[in-house]
Amino acid sequence: MMRVWIRPASLRPLVASGLLCAALAACAPEEKPAPLPPAPIPAAAVAPPPVALSSQVVERAGAFRTYMKHAASISAGFTNGPAIEQSLTLGESYEVEALSRGEIAYAAVVALQEPGFVAGVRTYAVDPVQRKALAQRIASDPYYATALPGAHAAAGLIIASLNAEGAKVRGAGERVKKSAYDVQHQAWSKTPITDPAGRLAQAKALSAAPMTSETADLDQLKKAVTGSDAKTIELQVATDAAASAPPYTQVVTRGLAVAAIAALGEGGDDNDAALEPLLDDSKGGFCLTMSKLNLYQCLAVAKPWYEDIFCLGQHVLIDTGQCISKAAGQPQPVQTPLPPTAVQSPPSAAAAGGARR
Image 1: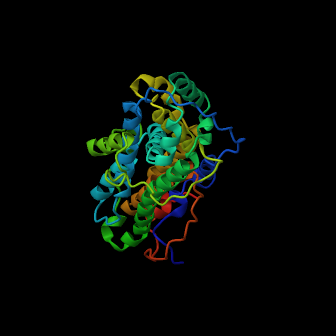
Image 2: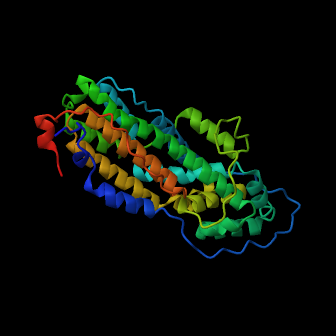
């Protein structure tokens, strides 16, 4: 019987078909009664404070953007094992909670690029007492931000922009995964992986390391918060995004809430304590956690180099990109089967013995 070199059973952990699907389902928008919009606030003689977002929130958004940019840049043109390990190192380098919080922080910066939303929120910022009361109300009930003027347009911008970020990473993963089949025509790809135990340990260590933002990304996000044009700073928000009505996912709702507090002028460094809980999305974090666990299991059973490419494509890039898009409210994309390009020859003795079914 003719067989392919890829061992699907060994490289697709049992949890992938069940728990990851459950993780993606957990990111579905939550149905809640529509909140009543806040009552109009009379204008005051004193101008409202400027838009302000704490440096810690901007740093989290920058770390998210930096990681997504690097992950999307991973190429499928592998010619040796060290190149695969280098790409794995790049893709593995995110801590689940940090990436999840960074997605919400980035969503807030994106929402601040919707002029109608910012202008609408700032009509409530003219009275100091009511401004602080509204900020406290949003902090205690993030869903209340969805009733503010311009919220639907800002939500549509968040959804389209985050889905675009996730799609770029997922697209890179699909190309890498396909190369796991194509590369089997090259003899080096079927040689044993160097130090598999050390490689797995490194993946776990990188998954627990702090995430940081590149200076260029951080500077662009700071400019975006203060009102610089999104095209000028290359924020790459979806300029043609359509407005979106509730229900929203927690990422969208909380991103709107953080942006609203910032637009009120109440989101500066002195208000970190109120903003930090708004960055918590346990559902999106669960999806990313399952992606990591599937990666560890995949790396634990991978033997030749082409199997490491499969782990990188599927569990580092496709799963992660899919979790990011799903957390923003996008439907799970349909997975198209790969073309039958794998080498059609009997597996090696080591591969046959290592297969787990």
